[in-house]
Length: 368
Image 1 (spheres, one colour):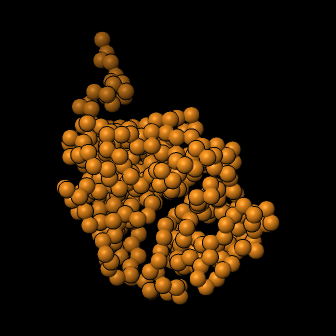
Image 2 (cartoon, rainbow, N blue to C red; image 1 turned 30 degrees about the vertical axis):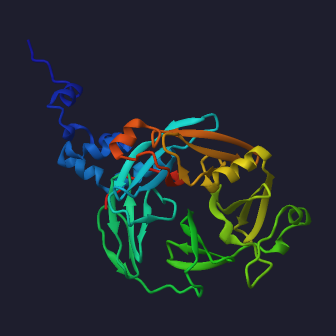
Image 3 (cartoon, rainbow, N blue to C red; image 1 turned 180 degrees about the vertical axis):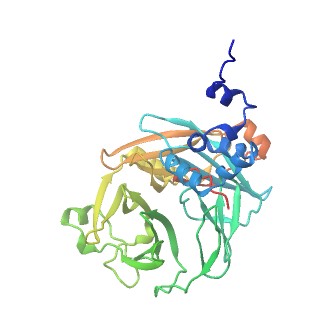
């Protein structure tokens, strides 16, 4: 009897389960769809897998999938142990009212501060004049040079390129916020200017905050215009939280007169539109009691509002406001300070902590 021909499928399954026999394209596609934690752990499978996992191509492919799964990023400091903890949880869909956070990273050096929201899963950390980039997914920190350099973060050829100092004419002593939209990084300078840094051209342009005469009569009646010292017609943009509103630059703020405002810039003529919504009394009281502030929009288009205090032994509560429907809702995030396990393993204790929370965080498997 003639010997049976070996089945290709049988060979693939039984040849010592060696990943080198799996077609490269299939290996690549499988890896790009796995959870980040599994991908990082699978570096030890073989040299081939380690090479694939650390490649720029896989990092780019994974990032595309990751952007469809936005997360909330939470970070707070523990002064007793001189550590900073970073957690994350999935953003809440419109019908969800709870989620569970995951511990992503602990930074042992307390002197690093985080002031701006993550961009493509990377966090900018500052320590005096020093700047570092943190990737909670890979648990890595990269310190940047003190001089003005440009570094293209990638996985193949990594090198620094020195550029000319960019002077936009305004002092940077009063910089606030920061949001990345379509290759531009926007941040507020002082009270009446917004700067846009174009990542591709490496140039900075200044954008004027909206003027009082841009508002119609109805808006003027509903909106209190904040004055800067030298230009009483300029809205005080320093009170804003910059947001990515459906691909457009926006700014949100809330004041004690129970109005939620959203400014939206139209790219065609750089004009500003405004949406104003009355906040229900019970929610307005909550704003004051909890010290709520906006940190941006989530994928549903709702503005996220959070307290800056993490209460021990309690789930963390986030609040959402839909500017279109003028509706509020709340959701809880468990697994941070409310967990006996977390409080024990990390030694959080029973003290309340200063909390930072940002929407739109994504996982990124790019290695430094």
